[in-house]
Image 1 (cartoon, rainbow, N blue to C red):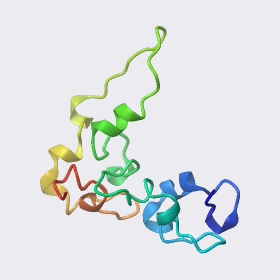
Image 2 (tube, one colour):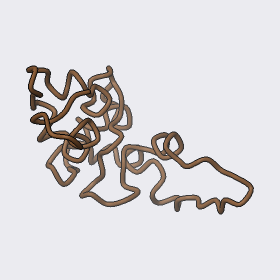
Image 3 (cartoon, one colour):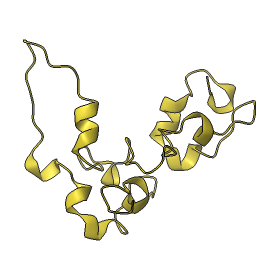
Image 4 (tube, rainbow, N blue to C red):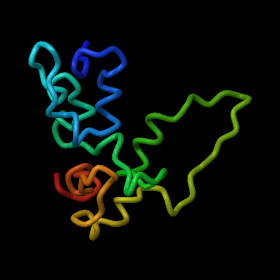
Length: 120
Protein backbone atom coordinates (compact mmCIF):
# COMPACT_ATOMS: atom_id res chain seq x y z
CA UNK A 1 0.00 0.00 0.00
CA UNK A 2 1.36 3.40 -1.01
CA UNK A 3 1.43 6.01 1.78
CA UNK A 4 2.40 9.68 1.46
CA UNK A 5 5.54 10.11 3.60
CA UNK A 6 4.76 6.68 5.09
CA UNK A 7 1.89 8.12 7.14
CA UNK A 8 -1.23 6.09 7.89
CA UNK A 9 -4.36 7.49 6.24
CA UNK A 10 -2.40 9.19 3.46
CA UNK A 11 -2.95 6.71 0.63
CA UNK A 12 -4.35 7.22 -2.85
CA UNK A 13 -7.53 8.68 -1.33
CA UNK A 14 -5.36 11.39 0.23
CA UNK A 15 -3.65 12.05 -3.11
CA UNK A 16 -7.08 12.39 -4.75
CA UNK A 17 -7.80 15.49 -2.64
CA UNK A 18 -5.04 17.43 -4.44
CA UNK A 19 -3.63 15.32 -7.28
CA UNK A 20 -1.74 18.23 -8.83
CA UNK A 21 0.15 18.61 -5.55
CA UNK A 22 0.71 14.97 -4.54
CA UNK A 23 1.00 12.84 -7.70
CA UNK A 24 4.74 13.52 -7.93
CA UNK A 25 5.28 12.70 -4.23
CA UNK A 26 7.22 9.59 -3.28
CA UNK A 27 6.63 7.06 -0.54
CA UNK A 28 9.39 5.64 1.67
CA UNK A 29 10.45 3.24 -1.12
CA UNK A 30 10.74 5.98 -3.75
CA UNK A 31 7.54 5.00 -5.59
CA UNK A 32 5.62 8.04 -6.79
CA UNK A 33 1.91 8.45 -6.21
CA UNK A 34 1.49 8.59 -9.99
CA UNK A 35 2.90 5.06 -10.22
CA UNK A 36 1.01 3.66 -7.23
CA UNK A 37 -2.26 5.53 -7.80
CA UNK A 38 -2.60 5.63 -11.60
CA UNK A 39 -6.37 6.14 -11.60
CA UNK A 40 -6.13 9.00 -9.09
CA UNK A 41 -3.34 10.69 -11.02
CA UNK A 42 -4.84 10.09 -14.47
CA UNK A 43 -2.15 7.68 -15.65
CA UNK A 44 -4.43 4.99 -17.07
CA UNK A 45 -4.31 6.26 -20.62
CA UNK A 46 -6.73 8.85 -21.84
CA UNK A 47 -9.47 9.21 -19.25
CA UNK A 48 -11.33 11.94 -17.43
CA UNK A 49 -10.47 12.69 -13.81
CA UNK A 50 -12.70 11.26 -11.11
CA UNK A 51 -11.97 14.15 -8.74
CA UNK A 52 -11.74 17.33 -10.84
CA UNK A 53 -14.42 19.96 -10.11
CA UNK A 54 -14.60 23.41 -11.71
CA UNK A 55 -13.72 25.79 -8.85
CA UNK A 56 -14.42 22.86 -6.49
CA UNK A 57 -18.17 23.13 -7.11
CA UNK A 58 -20.28 19.99 -6.75
CA UNK A 59 -21.75 18.77 -10.03
CA UNK A 60 -19.27 20.69 -12.19
CA UNK A 61 -17.08 17.72 -13.04
CA UNK A 62 -15.82 16.13 -16.25
CA UNK A 63 -19.10 14.38 -16.98
CA UNK A 64 -21.99 12.24 -15.92
CA UNK A 65 -20.36 8.78 -16.35
CA UNK A 66 -18.36 9.38 -13.16
CA UNK A 67 -21.51 10.11 -11.14
CA UNK A 68 -23.27 7.02 -12.49
CA UNK A 69 -20.26 4.79 -11.83
CA UNK A 70 -19.91 6.02 -8.24
CA UNK A 71 -23.59 6.33 -7.36
CA UNK A 72 -24.79 4.36 -4.34
CA UNK A 73 -26.78 1.22 -5.17
CA UNK A 74 -30.50 1.75 -5.60
CA UNK A 75 -32.73 -0.23 -3.27
CA UNK A 76 -36.51 -0.38 -2.87
CA UNK A 77 -36.31 2.23 -0.10
CA UNK A 78 -33.93 4.54 -2.03
CA UNK A 79 -35.02 7.95 -3.18
CA UNK A 80 -33.53 8.57 -6.61
CA UNK A 81 -32.20 12.07 -7.06
CA UNK A 82 -31.34 13.02 -10.61
CA UNK A 83 -28.94 15.95 -11.03
CA UNK A 84 -30.33 18.97 -12.82
CA UNK A 85 -29.74 19.09 -16.56
CA UNK A 86 -27.50 22.12 -16.04
CA UNK A 87 -25.01 19.98 -14.11
CA UNK A 88 -25.03 16.83 -16.28
CA UNK A 89 -21.94 16.48 -18.45
CA UNK A 90 -20.75 19.93 -17.35
CA UNK A 91 -17.44 20.07 -19.22
CA UNK A 92 -18.82 18.24 -22.26
CA UNK A 93 -21.13 21.24 -22.73
CA UNK A 94 -18.33 23.74 -22.10
CA UNK A 95 -15.59 22.45 -24.41
CA UNK A 96 -14.76 25.98 -25.54
CA UNK A 97 -13.77 26.72 -21.93
CA UNK A 98 -11.51 23.67 -21.41
CA UNK A 99 -8.33 25.73 -21.70
CA UNK A 100 -9.62 28.31 -19.24
CA UNK A 101 -11.61 26.51 -16.54
CA UNK A 102 -9.57 25.32 -13.52
CA UNK A 103 -10.23 23.45 -10.31
CA UNK A 104 -9.21 24.73 -6.87
CA UNK A 105 -5.66 23.41 -7.39
CA UNK A 106 -5.27 25.22 -10.70
CA UNK A 107 -5.55 22.11 -12.91
CA UNK A 108 -7.11 23.05 -16.23
CA UNK A 109 -10.11 21.12 -17.50
CA UNK A 110 -8.31 20.19 -20.72
CA UNK A 111 -5.75 18.26 -18.65
CA UNK A 112 -8.20 16.74 -16.14
CA UNK A 113 -11.03 16.01 -18.61
CA UNK A 114 -9.34 15.09 -21.89
CA UNK A 115 -12.22 12.94 -23.12
CA UNK A 116 -14.89 15.51 -22.27
CA UNK A 117 -12.76 18.25 -23.83
CA UNK A 118 -12.01 16.32 -27.01
CA UNK A 119 -8.27 16.08 -26.33
CA UNK A 120 -8.05 12.28 -26.89
